[in-house]
Amino acid sequence: MPLLKLSNVSQHYQIGDITIKALDNLSFTIEEGEFVAVMGPSGSGKSTFLQVASMLAEPSSGSIMLKDKDVTHYDEKDRAHLRNKEIGFVFQQFNLLAKTSALENVALPLLYAGDSRTSRYQKAKEMLGKVNLSDRIHNAPNQLSGGQQQRVAIARALVNNPSILFADEPTGNLDSKSGADIKDLFKKLHQEGKTIIMVTHEKYISKIAKRLITLKDGRIVSDRKT
Image (cartoon, rainbow, N blue to C red; front, side, top):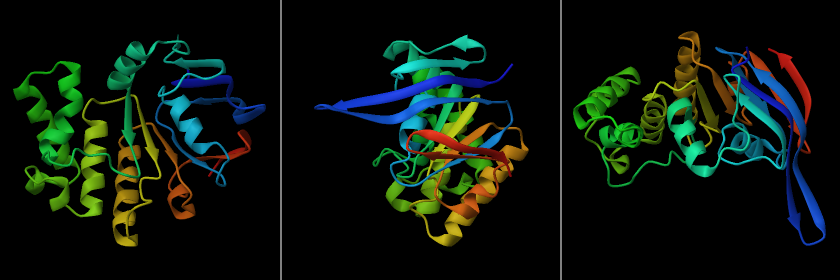
């Protein structure tokens, strides 16, 4: 049973008389434990793919199965619950709360999940330790480097033990040294069994994935093992 399956998924937008086909009849499956890189030129549909595959947006047509359950037409409340339980996100911009400590940022998904204060802070501390930030748990984002902020974001994405980790250009705002550190962290997470889908334009990042999907004009033009 695939962990994630998209069947004939399209995402169209209407601008006046023009129909924009951001995604055009995509079909693929993701197995548990895979590390998949998604690449393509600007305008190829990478961002839309990420939004639809991660249940941030409902597709115009087609179906999405997660753990053999049809989640295509979940309403926003059910999609939000599903994302909190099954999906982790790592973004290019980090998306951390500015005046909130690393510990509180990482604990936030557990607050929405209903964990007690003691439980969520304990789990957040453990996850920050996993990304080598045990000495930075009380620092706000402006007291951390870009690489450290991205590690906080990764810890936050992992704290609920999601089934799939989505990453959108996770090294895009980092210097080469910090980017290499984040690459190594994703490689380690995959070795530990995490399922990862990463949108990236960095070829050296895509080389650590085990599968490469290339998009162009909203379609899959290549899907191969690396």
